[in-house]
Length: 454
Image (cartoon, rainbow, N blue to C red):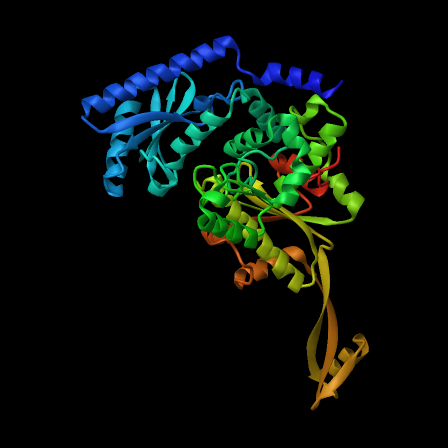
């Protein structure tokens, strides 16, 4: 099949149906009316805005998170915005199905309405980047810019988003380090279509700087500062935010995820298949047979990390895995790779070249002229005297589990500070994982988890 046929097939699955559109439209109208009535009844100077993919009509079929921003006048102090914004969010949410308070830069309300997640987020009603005061204020500007520039290429964005999801490179959260939805929209606006973006994977990387709003001409100093900062941090792409020259839209995009996009884009252009968008599910296999095939060993630490959310927990797990890698290599074990995550509990997996190490210990013996001295002399290979006492070398085998336990007891592993105590209480397993981690262990040991080849 050629690109066109594949793309048509994918579009029928990612483009919302007429019924779905009607449902979303009614949902948003109802929410807007409800928000306006509530604002009026509380006598507040607030404007409700929808932002995000629903507002921009770049959402994927079946993916309906609503972002309703409650925009306050820039004149009010931040404390007041937080307090009144949360209060307003709660009053609106009480008329919906269920809600809870969630926390980002400031608290906001996360509600459910007709089976759809609705975030009610207070922000400032800003007209330009110079007025931005909180991290969320830009969203209104982002929305406006995309709506003004997309020119009917909504389906191209849907294709790109679905492709990025399919190859596991979508999401700018710190534990994913992939492409955000807004970055996907910018790339389509800049290069024209889904296929054009894929064709430019190499070009983008070489050019490095993408400046859709021409900030390098309009605000040269501010934009150059952004470029220098991000280049020094060795980011794969620098996409100067079309609504704010101080910001790189691709700041959270990591090399691994850009690399996945780079290879997969090439593979798709060469031989297009629907599996790029909708992968068949991960390969399965036995982690024990992987260990036998490679002759390596697997150490898994499993522990309870409490209620920590993923974007807080994962960097801590990564830091701790790096700490084990350093500490164990000092102890004579070679760590060939590590993997972290959370199933029922948090886990750190380490693949090692050996399970035991031989150490030489110096063994003090008795005085040489005694019966026990003669015995000691006979039994040991290398024997020497210090004064009248005999000494010998003794070879001992130490298991990696004992070594890890001792390292943890002596605080000799650099661990993420939020999970330090939990890791010390971890179950340490050798060449065995609990049932819920069997697939994860296979994907890690076989490297299928990160495999770039088809």
